[in-house]
Length: 502
Image 1: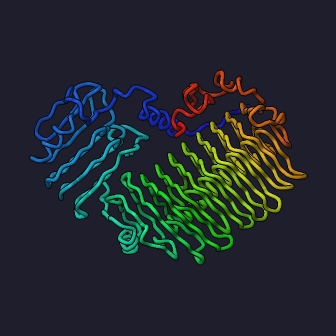
Image 2: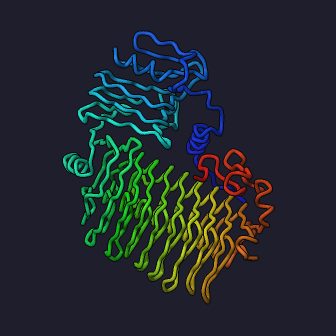
């Protein structure tokens, strides 16, 4: 049996991202922290490490910024820069963080005056990024301040209305959110940003709370109505939506909290709340528009998703996704329409890698194409898992992991119970296997209460394990560079090193 792999660059990034989470040595970083400065040389406004494990005291840095511009670089074995203690300065001076690989923000950074911030990643490295971790964000008090990220200049905004107006004036521009925003004073009757967006949006680790949208006219509904198209890309990253409520009654429309329709990159985004639709629905995004770049990575949603639309794609993270990587969903998904594709992560996914879903999935409509704990209809799925219960209607393909496996499903597992009505194909792992390469896949026979892993089709690569067996060590075929196992993590079940459970 062949094994389908993520591209080498994507896999290398997965490993490097895991390293940033503490999976590998953290000494390859310049740490801007509250510890004493050590192994750093600062001269003429440039601070460079003299060896790995270098520390730059945050107060020392703030004092230097009061006097002049400061540039922090990597070198001498240190390849990343991370801020782990709160940093603030009020002068007109600029801080530049120039890293061979990634720049990580793990604590609040405040540009309290008219000063500037420059971020440089991949300065000699590859497959790295500007990353935000819990507790990390960058606040700008002055919207005229300068923000440069990898050579691009960003316009700072502080409210949804400002952002919408700025995008309307330049829909291919680069924009950033300068602070957290509470939208509770607004009840939007259409997508707030209803201009098609072809630029870059940087959330800077901020949140938008209490977003409420009821749009009963637009085909695409979310904070952003549409990003990108078949000929143009766009990007959204480092943003969180909290207590969002988005609903639409448009039949065959597409609804998500963050984006209704997308053809671009969504990364390090999250959402919490509820989505109600009469068509395609996702906790974070509605549907991929099949653009030349269309992917969701390092994102997650805890959103209750429900749709009553016919022929709909519904998922806890995205309705239909072309590529979904290092992402997860924890909310419940319910579909009551005719012939839906329903999954805990995605209704349909062309390429899903290192993802998981834990929410319950229910389809009570008339027939269903595919109902699965992770994906309703999966094309290529690798190194992923699902743990939620799955309930489907009559004449449906229903599986604890994937409802309808139409291509390659490799090195994955499920533990949730799957059930369905009459004339349905039900399996502990897959409901129906078309003619895919299903290999090194597993289901928990005890927690699922199912002795059959495959409802219909050829599934010689699906193996049933007891609960104790699944927790006793990584199953055959699970790469230890991708998977980990620890009794104190994920209830003892295998987990993804680059995408650990919350």
